[in-house]
Image (cartoon, rainbow, N blue to C red; front, top):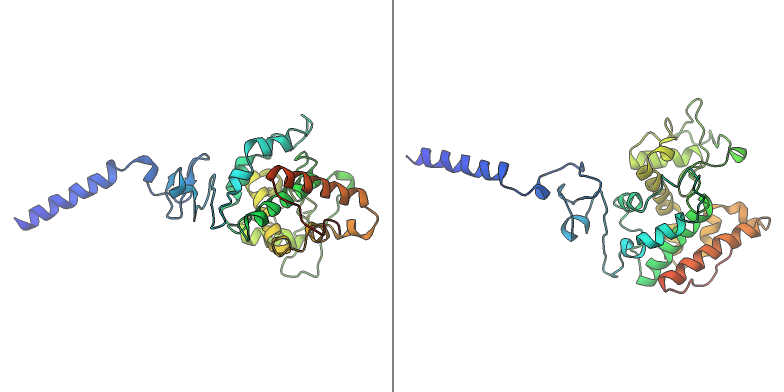
Length: 272
C-alpha cells in the first residue's frame, strides 16, 4: 500500500511539473523569444527576475548598486534620435536596433555599470559618441569601399588570417584587424577569422563585437577618469596626430551632446 501511494504521488508531481507550470517559467537554454529575457537560471520571462542580475540574453536591463540602468538611459527616443538622422537608404537603417544593443549587453555586465552614476553615464555617452562617429549615425555597417584593406597582421600567429578574408571595419565601432576579429570570435563564440562578415550580418553579434572591443580596450580608460580624449587615442590613434582635428572635434561634439542628454558633466581632457 505504501508503494502504491508513493507511485501515485510521483505521478501527481510529474503531472504538475509537466502541465501546470506557467509558460514563462519553462526551462530554456537561452532560446527565448526575442522580446523575452533568458534568466540566469535559463528561464524565459520579463521583469527583474528574468531581465535583471544574471540575465543571459534578451532585453536585459541589469541595475547595479549605483542605480544606473543602461536601458533607462538608452531609451527608444535616444537610440532613434541617433539613427533617425541617417539617410533612408543607409545600409544600417534596417540593421541596427536598440533591442539588439540591449540583447548584446548580457556578457558585459560591467558596461555602463562601473563607478558612480556619473561615471556610468559618461561611459555610455562615450560609447555612443564613437559609434555615431564611426557609422555616421548608424548608417554604415561596413567600412567604405574606398578605404578598405585586408587589415591582416601575420605577427599575431594565434589569429591567422583566413585565405580570401578581409578584416576591414564592420559594426558599430568598425571592428578591424585579424587579431580583433579573432579575439572577439573566441569570446563571443563565432568564427571571427573564417567568417568576419558575421559582424555585418548578425546585428547582435555586431553589437557584441563592439562591446567586446570596448571592454577589452576602452572601458578601463573611461572609468579610471582619464577623459574622453584618451578613448579617441585608443580607438583611432591616427586622428590624434594633428592631421584629423575635424574628426576629433566630431567625436567630442557627439560625446558632449550625449552627456548633456544624460544630465552629466563631460569631465576634463576631452581632446587627445
